[in-house]
Length: 308
Length: 257
Image (tube, rainbow over all chains, first blue to last red):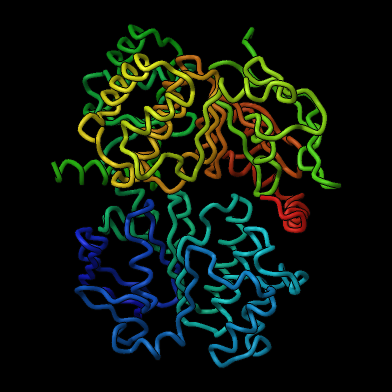
């Protein structure tokens, strides 16, 4: 499989802050590749480097077969970048923004209309409206249309779904899947761990380091221990009681249940007795399958132990 | 169940010109409950929260918060609630200790109480060594935990959290939810909005708004059962989707957040 991106040992420092530490990964052509991590993990810095807008201090990056620092002029014709902050002209209309971006890249909206049709058709009825007067979901669609209008081979989307409601987020991922069918490689970042399942492969990023790169399913399967889901009427009391249990390794609230791991094979009678002593008579504990977030937490624990 | 009601809303209507942002909302929130307030962008959540926090007057209807009337006693409401929003709300150029003292003072606590609670809080958050550091020097996760602690520093009846965990790592998010559990178990009601649908599952009950109306209100498990959905996200997509286009356009026309 040919590579859209090959990154090797990328480092970037701002003052005394190491934003990126030795970032190495590959992106295959035609895949949706996700970077998942919290604010401040280094996602935006990395995306600026991928978009040729920033130079790394060390390391090399080959994008679409070209060196990112030497071949940036040629590369920019083939990269569509959508920054995290809405960066279109608020005092131009929807249509003017799109025409402007097309003309900067020496093309026209008509020429590449097919590519953006599905996305742009949602906002086309409002083409005379100023971009500053659009709702969040519409701004997002306009920004994506502008990033696509020169028919890039690589689309770089920095947190496109942050702050967007779940309905618009679902629609947005549907659009990305359609773009993928057109052969466009998509690199996307998100702080929402549950969005990993929409990607072909994901990289988990934390404090400037990649913790893991793999297919979402493999990431889940890599959880190293037996995982249990515990429920009771009083979740907080259950959480504290589980944490006090000697054989407990980890306890995290997880939606309407609590995810817990133990050093013993299967928690048995001793655990029930322990919970009863803590005043919890209605606990239900069953084995469950780890999700991406469970694995993320496990990796963070390991990193913390290593750093101590 | 005989629970104390801390928020009582009946037939709440809020209009901006001819635009109806809140269309006859009616619901109760109970003491010590974690109540999730969900809705698509532009569904009318922000307007409702502004009314509940005494910042905006309703057009009509009855709104009682912490025992006070939102029309006639908004200042009393403000004294009895805490508020924390997604955009960080502490002063970056003050130290942790100074921020805590400032908020304690604003809420009218006396010096001695402020001092005692500050020390207790710094210990609890294991922040003692950071006490004299500027807020701007703190990592995001710590800032958010601190912002929450400051929002409940004056021991309000209700704390409103507007998208409290945006952008934090999974571990911090869980520590944050533990703080919420602890707060609720101490009898403070937690009213929370979030875009993370998996996070809605942490709540005792959730309401879902669409086009200015509450279209669903129940426990997460009951909603999932009722709508034959695997997750709250599925429930949300099923019931919040139909009106979305309409609300997005109206929001844009009226220029309301």
